Structure formats: C-alpha cells, structure tokens
Length: 388
Image (cartoon, rainbow, N blue to C red):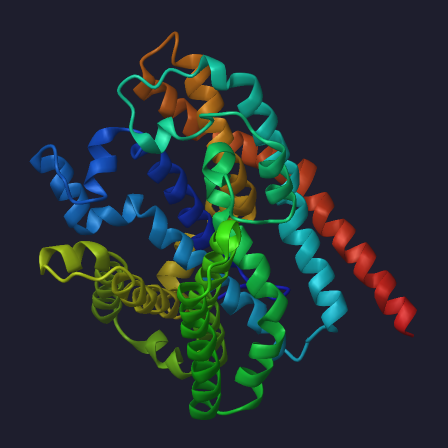
C-alpha cells in the first residue's frame, strides 16, 4: 500500500476507474436500450444480462458516485490518523479551492458550450437522459444557482455536479464529526453520530412535509439529501480509523481474496439483486452497496495483487485526473455527439467522446485543477502566517 502525503495511491486509482465508469454510464444511458434497463425494462436478453449480472459494475454510475463519497470520507480522515490535523480555516480554504474553483470554471465552460450548441442538437433515437441535456435556455436564475451551488437546473447544463454540491456541504461539517469519531471509541462515536444524523435527517423530512416552503422547497429537500449522503462520508471515516483491524487479510490466500472481491461486487450491484428477489426499496440498495464498497476498500488495502494492478502508471494517471474527468465528460460528450453526430454514426461519436473526455480531463487537470490546488495552498498558508 503506497501512500503519497495523505493519499493512498491504489485508492486514488480506484477513484479514477470509478470516474471512467461514470463516463461509460452516461454514454450508454443516452440510448433507450440502457436507459430503460435502469428501470429493469429490457429490450433483449443481452441487455438483461448486462444489467442483472455482475457485469453491471462496469456501468454502475450511481454506485461509482457512492464510492467517491466513501473515499472522500476515508481520505479526509487520514490526517487525524497521521496526527496532521489542520486548522479549520486552513482545511476549509483548501477544500474550497479544491472543489469549488474547478467546479465553477468547468461549469462555466459547459454553460458556454450549451448556449452555443444546443440549437444544433439532434435527439433522434436517443433517450431522455440525453434529450434533457442542453435542452433549453440557460437563465440568470440558473447561473446564480450554479454560483451558489444550489441544485437547480443542473441537468440542463452538467447534471453530474449534483454530487459536488453535497460534497462541499458535507466538507463544511466534516472535521467536527471526524473529531468525534477520532476521539471516542467505536460504540460511543457510532451512537453519537448516528443519533445526530437521525435527528437531522428525519427532522428535515418532517419539516419539509409540515411547512410549505413554496419555491424554496427544492432547496430544503436537497439539504435532506445532503444529510443522507453524509452516511457514506462518515462510513469512510470509520473505515479509515479501523482499517488496521483488517490487516490479517494480507496473509490470507488468493481464494479468500477472490471470494471477498466477488461478494463486494455482488453487494455493490445490490439494486439488481433487489430486483431479482423482488424487494422494493429505494435507499436499501445504496446501504447494501455501501458495505460492498467498504469491503472492496478493505480488499484493495490488504492485497498485494490489487495494489500492484492499481498502481500501474495509466491507472495512477486516471486517478490523478479523476475529478477533472468527472467534471468535463458531460460537456465533451454533448459537444462531440452534436458536432460529429452529423457526419458519422452516433454510436461512434459516443466512443470518440470517451477518448476526448480523457484528453480534456488531462488538459483541465493541468490548466484548472492544479492551479486551484496551488492557490488554495497559497491562501491557506497566508492564514497560517496571520495566526502566528
């Protein structure tokens, strides 16, 4: 397990693979065959197999985002373990520059491209997941919402940023909850964080039902979703604190690790399992998938083979540019298919879009993400000097 600063390289690569899965997911669901399969309506046996079998993991976009959340909670907790906690002002400044600056720059690029190209879009034969993107005028209200990271009119321009809104909000309160997890034993910290979470989550659900917030109801409901997704962050933090308990797996044989891998994939694909066994639940599959993701992390952290695979240079690069890839792939997919779709088969345009998304991610990483991280360090270091 190779660490770089407060990062674990194999998990960084896993984030990169997950980002690529999200790209593939959004390309596939642009077609009705795969979009319908999300609701378990199958056009043929091949699509059914790709949806209900473990192969679904290769286009499990929603589960990949859950993995991002768990990984963020895991990585953000590492400074506590390594005794390198930062002052809150330093932490939140770096976090702001790390998340918000690339988000707003690339959201701006996506908005400009949408305005320029939406009139040339051909929706023939494509699903609503594609049709609803770059579909109508970008209003001033929408732009203000983008600037304030409010979940409004996101789908029209770059819908994937919904997860970044939750990530930024959770980042604000993360150090306080992480401190409780770090200082107290498992039972005490689990009870305190669990009770606090339940009060907040069910409280906001009750308030949203009991009070008419009018046009602001969507904001209140979205805050409830943020509280829901915080589960995945803090699960990652608990795993980071207690990951030493699983080091015995390093000595286990390949068969045991293979079984763990298979179980983790099955759990991550819980939504398909719920359908097969006719269990009706919206959030149940997400919780089951959480355990699958944590099991996958445990395996990666305790498998020499997994570490060797995930620390190959191409995967390390993919992990490095994963955030940029996540941000740029929708505008690249849309621009590529709108422009090239007029000259070549739309299927080939989507394949080219995947390649161009990787190229654009590399460029965005160098021109946007790296400078933003650098600026965050500069500003936070100024705070440190002012404190002295």
